[in-house]
Image 1 (cartoon, rainbow, N blue to C red):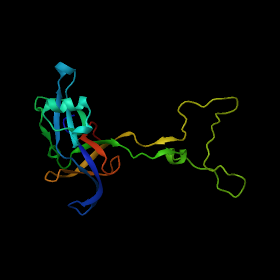
Image 2: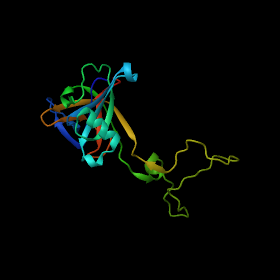
Image 3: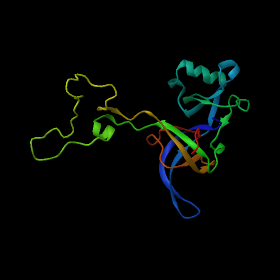
Image 4: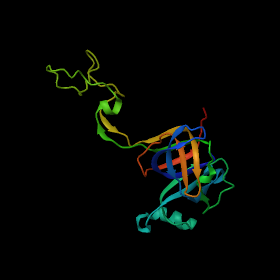
Length: 210
């Protein structure tokens, strides 16, 4: 991975292509990320950079993270995230990573935390069908049968059941960068990306190409 940046999902809108087609896009506000640590293959076993994103009050940062910021001489930030990089020789502590590293037409992957829905039933969680809504004696339209068959007194591992839905790390692959506004630190990505509005996402160059 050679390109990556942390940003904030602002929401969705649409832009018009030169041929008049309407393209749905998600707007990501990617303010500059500052490098606070560089990891090399010789010292750490792999190449990576650690970047800081998002402003935060100093008293809200714990001592281990505060030490990282003070050592790098960088203002405390809300999020620290590590990016694997093929070559770290071109980076230095305190350097800013900006959205202009991406250009129109780039293929990117977007990683974020999906919207949390709390505890949900299996119809919403797994898309299962409910039972008949007739006027007879059936009053368990949304209930689940746990039976595994005659003589089998157990529930098999992996059975789809009600439970916590959403709030998980989600990656959408091979999205296209439609537009980059370096003056306002905006990246317009074609299609939908995971997470709610104002959720933090990572935009990186695509690891797979179609």
